Length: 400
Length: 83
Image 1 (cartoon, rainbow over the protein chains, first blue to last red):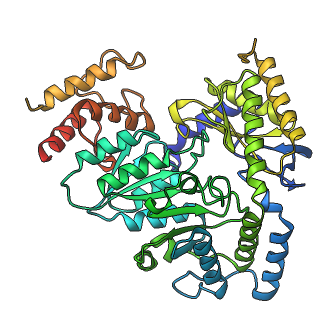
Image 2 (image 1 turned 180 degrees about the horizontal axis):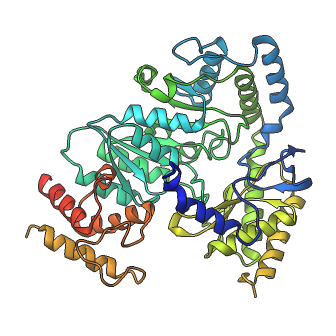
Image 3 (image 1 turned 120 degrees about the horizontal axis):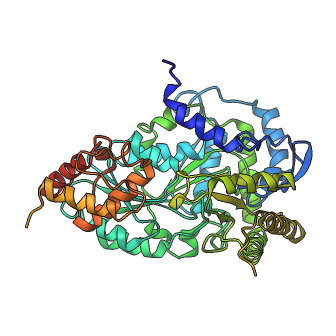
């Protein structure tokens, strides 16, 4: 018996996705980015509507220059973990920059956003504690809950009353209760009602962690995320985020006003047992953060673009998520239709993400798009036209 | 009145049968993943429905040990007794 026998179901599911002669959606290669919004795929210039590069900063000249200069000055790697030989002056500088940006006293930087959730959640919620997770939480949050030893309880998506009910059931139970929500949910682009969760946190004495991976740089007057936009930053004990969305690089962080965060450096395995971020990434991230701070107009343009795409797709007769945000998903009913639709979009020059159950809410396949501040109105209109064309070809448009 | 494994198991079967995709011949011995063809997300969402009906929260780690409907019923009864 092969060690891979347990994946026979997975193999047949993948075979069914490619059965019609379509591509393997998990194997698309962006051969070369031409700009933040256009990439070369299969030798063709393709509009990128699935990169999470919300502000277009992966191609920022300032960030690129900073990376080049840092590589020249410091080399290209640290060859060590943060608690061994992997902490350099740049790591401290980045943590201080993030603390200042978020107006919080403490910051830990991780090597990826995934590890930031893994390392923070697993260390904060210990054996005798309770973790309360939104049902639609990202995999990194679920994985963090498995790496720790807390009791894990799910509450209904974006439903503060449901959380309250579940916290009430825990009244009198020893142990801390850590609630985890996301600013913008990555599959449907829906925004957390943070003020409602903050109210439950205040009433029950729970701790609140907000993963603002998709909302930092996107929401709030200064780009600090949904907590800032809702005016409840003081109620959020821990903000976790990533550099790989609006900041265009790679890495993750946790910021907090709780001094205890520094103790986590000594017990968070995803922080302790992996190599730290290389100098060029840190330098590029700090340059991108400066861009984010100095160009609030990027956020305005991003949300204008999000509304343009959301409205356009709805006008084309397609079913989308509930609100315009930088993640706009087209919801379909059938996996085979979603696969064919996604293939045809790529044929016609639009790259989006094909998201399949069970990674999606409610078992629906999604054509997940993400918008950028750097998309031009013409690029968005072109993408909407191609969506509308494919929908008509496949007979699934709801438009009259 | 306190729930028994049999009464909770019957309630779970009744809740499951409200879903037309679930096979009609299920009982307390039915295996949730194999016999009902539920994936991990479907199991978690289904348990959430039962939690609301019985006003109990089932920690996710407890689900790892549950294979049959009766296993789930026994778990819920023990959680209710503990609270």
